[in-house]
Image (tube, rainbow over all chains, first blue to last red; front, side, top):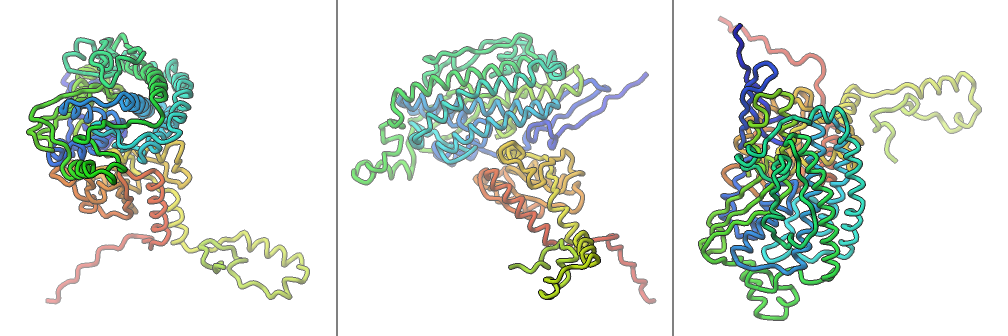
Length: 393
Length: 202
């Protein structure tokens, strides 16, 4: 008997591809013979555009890369530029950055969980997850006036100080969040349909995950203990007390379990960060006092000639890093997010390269689904948590 | 006071000029009362108002997200903003079942033909909302990769500013679209046939 394979085109407009991913599947009946992700439908040219902008002007672009976790992207760019300039920000700024990026992790995982569950058919979870995400977005709104595209971090500090009542609001959220995570788990963790659709589905061995450069929860779901917050700490993460949740089998369920456990750990870190900020003062230093790199405070600009000149120089040109290159990576909700800058001594980067976790993690999709059933492709795409804005940039 | 006749849906009682005050004051006979009751149960309207009313209050958007704005588009269906209050919560996965395309995000040159094809696949009547700066005019990405405004390839009914617009902004855009639909002319019945070709007089 002769059988033919069929080519199925999934996307770029498909409800389960999380944006504009296109996957060309070669099917033999229900089985996937070959899977090829085709990207580029959201290519925005951000890396090229960064060469025409100063370092600070590139921060708003990073919000629009992984738009589920804008502040993690801001942080990666700022840390990378700070490495290039060889400056360190005050401890209070570091604590605020840690607090906000951990809240970002919670909100990013909320979107992931909601959409992943919708893909598999559990529609209810979406409403629960978006309820909590809205709370994080109101915290962003409070701190910088934007719900999604925050652009709150600056090279050398923050755009402005945290507003009054901010810490109480964060504390309230962090206190009630574990209860909400229990709600998500009560909907899914023991749900037989959920287990049938995720247990043993889209497995990724630790060896394959390492070979494909997979990072983040997708790597830890396969049991590899690699978290940049522990392995290469930044922003004082080495002083926080938290665990790195690990999976065993590397299937879609383990990746789900790791992310849910990560949300709990994020609330733990955020709680410690709130205490730290409170100890260092609810109002206080929010940027480096080095006017070569950051804007001087407005009152000084109006009273001191030197500060005025610095203000003018920063606004007109930005800062001038020395000739050289720097790479700094952070543990974004999706994995290792790194910014690589090459500086030629001018105020604009000669090259900005983004090492985006979604792009690298997506490469492991064929390994997960080839030889498996076509229905599991959707569970696999959901479980690796990709954002097309970050893949195509 | 607005003229009750401006209301597209009016009962016969509202339609008819009111009776003289002297007559109203008199006790009503059983027959008059019955007639009044019946007249209140009959609605008068035009087919156009009825069709537009139905269309405006059951907009089915295409579930088609491009970038950041798509997340805010999801948020309007979420618990806080709940767009089902405006009858527009039924996001369809297929363009064949949708009447509204919300272009949520930046449209790259590679995506443009796909977007146009999706638009062509949607059945008439159909509307387009350009959500956010990128789909309205290219936004902050004025470069080689991004289409400078989706109105270059599809007709746009409502532009929603913002980067990304807040969900309230998008809901306002949907309400503006509803206003537009309510005042639009409809085409009924068989679509105009092709004109018979005139036989050239020899």
